[in-house]
Length: 205
Image 1 (cartoon, rainbow, N blue to C red):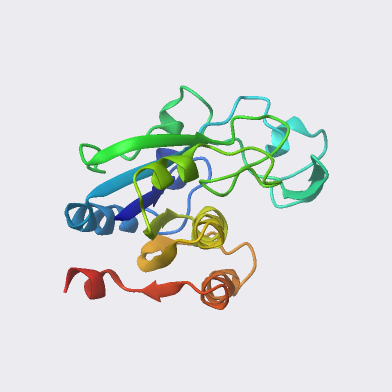
Image 2: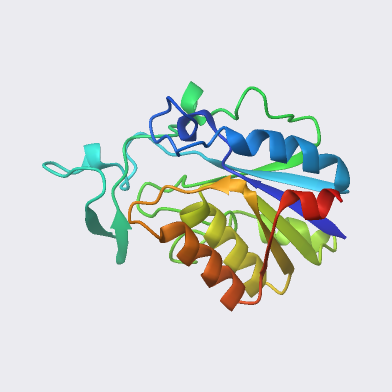
């Protein structure tokens, strides 16, 4: 079976959100168009406690974009976003949620961030996504969402590491680009790990 993984298509990552990804709203139409092609659709959801260690506001004198050590790992500090129970953490209103069979929350541990939909950044704790896909005999994963150079990239890389043939839908993603070239580098990293990077038209056609 193959599955479509929708990564963090949440209000705070859309234009006007707390951590807006440029043109982040453009991924919604691609997600809606592709969902009917898949027997299984799942979604990941950033779901942070207010005291999350990745928030610059929780580090005195620090600003978004700075790097600190969190749980022994290098951590980019972000604006406060996708806090549990807030509107910003909700899925985009125009995203069709009916086809989504299961939602996997991530970033719930205040002590470590979780870019990937499968594991936290230290790969110390699973979200349950890998186990769920294995139980459904998923052998191919198609990934899209926000943001290309962080959560989408790491979700795709972890899917590959778990033995799934993995495709990243390039036009179904948008990136943060803290540094110019981050998105291109992320796509190259997925390709180098054995993944495919394709356009939605290739899948729809």
